[in-house]
Length: 266
Image (cartoon, rainbow, N blue to C red; front, side):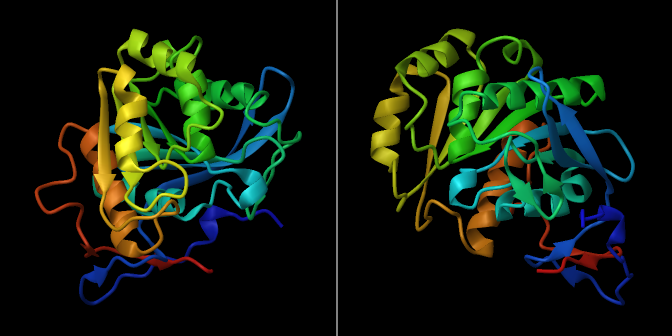
């Protein structure tokens, strides 16, 4: 059965509620489908602020589906739970080709990042067609490869403001992709865990050295999967600082919510 985001039950609490891993804040959520140029239908979810202007749009690219990555990978799930309410940010999550989650299964098969070019293009095209402003790619692990390989070339490059990379392995993305980002000149923020399994901060600084506008952020104590509320919150704060004018604030995003909340099922 396909998960329906309207099934969340929101209840007003007598006192401000601490924002925990499963806390869902109010938003306008809808299941969406993306159509690729090579004829596939991809499934996803769009979470929008309940009211007010959209300050930025995150087009999220998930970790490797052959190793458990999908649109519900925890940082992206928490982004969709929190950022529409806390920062006015629209969050588009979707399963790349051949990937399944509680939302459903996207058509096609995993293609090692090659056919996934059409998936990235479809997601950006969807955001453009919906009139969503200030569009940013946010890639995590395998998703960073897709952002690097396809974010700085057309038709995507002219439709986004930049990209935020979480735990880039730089396995599939090569020197020519970094050169393309250098040439396009758009902002590129690279969050690198201190204890990453594939690329640690010092090496990332060297590898991304050919992209003058790249900002490398080494995160002490973090690992590739950003496990734990402390690390997930750090990632969300960094993203909000990058993609919005108001940023996450001096002390980061709020850790309590005074309005109605729902609790996501595990």
